Length: 227
Image (cartoon, rainbow, N blue to C red):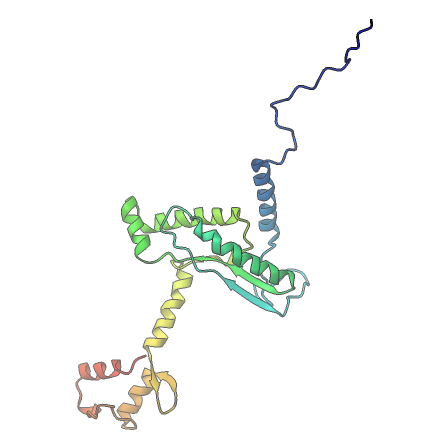
């Protein structure tokens, strides 16, 4: 009696990972390649109509503009926590939707680097606040980039940048040097108020004689008018 045998031996399972198997490591490499390309090509750069940030070629800038700004993270820790992307991803979806609708979307992010948290973190680590802040910002930028968010990286800022807080100081000085004229229903400069008081065109609200006041009393009276 003839015996039937299988000529082919059964395939043995292999522990080797297939070359093109989609793994977390492969997904990460694909993501990074695209993120590198986005940065190199300025995919999410929002062009200005004119000036240094205007397009280099003849491309037209969409007339419909949209500015998307997230709340600045505090670089008072070594990195982001899971609560940060919870909001940032939702904002990114909103920005991407409008970008695909043809809007010129400016979506960027800054870092709120002043304040007590940054100071406390510096004390805890025994490092100068600027050193810890700049190091933490660099790490946060790395983490945000790996999330694949569509930020215009050229416009990123920190509140400790001189070019930024120069203007916050300027705004404060404009407010400090102004007062509200109820009669004119608008803000005017302190210099105009002093000129009107010196000329007698205006009198103090409390009835005191401006001309008879000492320099200190005049300064105190002026301060009561400031915004």
